[in-house]
Image (tube, rainbow, N blue to C red; front, side):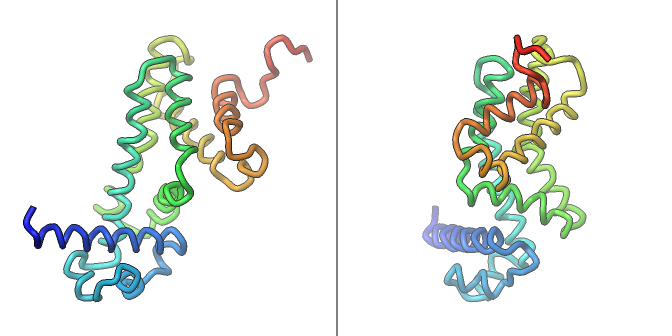
Amino acid sequence: MAESDERSAITIGRILDAARALFAARGYPEVTTDEIARAARVTKGGLYHHFPSKQRVYVAMLLADLEAKRRLFAAAVASHGTCRERLARLTGAFLALPEDESAMLRLVRRDVNFFQGEDRTRLVRAYQRALPEQVEAIVRDGMAEGELAPGNPRLVSWAFVGLVQVMIGDYAVRELGEGEARLEYVLRLFFEGAVALPAGVGR
């Protein structure tokens, strides 16, 4: 890599890191390019040299983050074991994300409607590849192996993702704690039903 390319890559990394912290703390509408430039220790002209707008910074930041998460969660999809075991690995990786990493996923769901056209499509597709489609692959295998009832794997995967999203909320953390309890809770809800009694317990 040429020295100028290396300097450029370092500058881009600083801009994206600064933007990540600002957007996670305050959301897309409240952050300005001036603030991003100051936090990244670059001039505003330097920022615009790499990103022509705040939107371009935001989209680049989220696409990079979602691709990293896709690779992380793909390890669970590629692993061996039952449907439940593989979903446990994927969900465990999701629930173990540090707060700043979880914040990036919340940003996609919260802010995506600020965008239209190609940017919105790219963000939605990147989110789908990062999480729901990974779950769908495991669910599809579970149905094929008879571990799950036949059905629409896409709908079932989105239902599972919805359950997992609840587990990262403040209330779930207060009630169940930071450890394995949240993972076991969501797996039990999904595989055994929300109000199913434990085996052997009468009414």
